[in-house]
Image 1 (cartoon, rainbow, N blue to C red):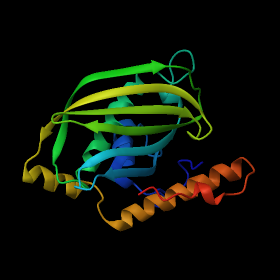
Image 2 (image 1 turned 180 degrees about the horizontal axis):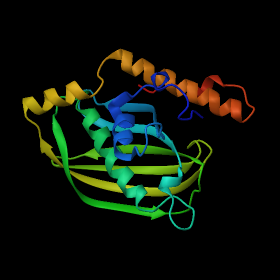
Image 3 (image 1 turned 180 degrees about the vertical axis):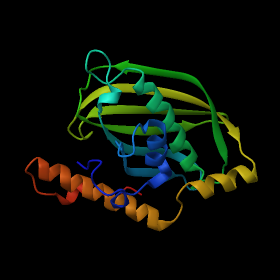
Length: 214
């Protein structure tokens, strides 16, 4: 798994999730715990969004701990809110609709287990359905990679959507990567992180893990 010592340019910042989270959590110049791994956006035959999934990771740092030495509970809904919002914004680049997440109507978290200092947490973010005015999303937090890690927290988030103006759409497109190069870098980053994870476990990279996610 990559650490903050790895040069930032080695990792794709697809959909700007990593950029957003660094801005939200940066306490010192070298504090870079969040890294984007990959993102899937699935459209129907009419170009409308069917579903979207994002996958990111972070290492539990001292600044994130509660008095009991585990990840602070309030960090989970805050991260869920931020990540689902950014993934929703990213979908504007792939669909004909332009809208902006405006406010939460519901955000629930099931706390199933805790996670301590130095552990790597992966977060799978899902957009399950987008209605006329509301998006239904969730986020699953795992200790380690979702394919083999234990589920720690399960969050569900409903968001009211506002229709965007052309100027709003231009701002979204300006501030989020939209070219194939960004997608390719995201996939390369995913492969690199997988190779490092497998190497740390003493395993050889398997072709089945090198999946194109977009």
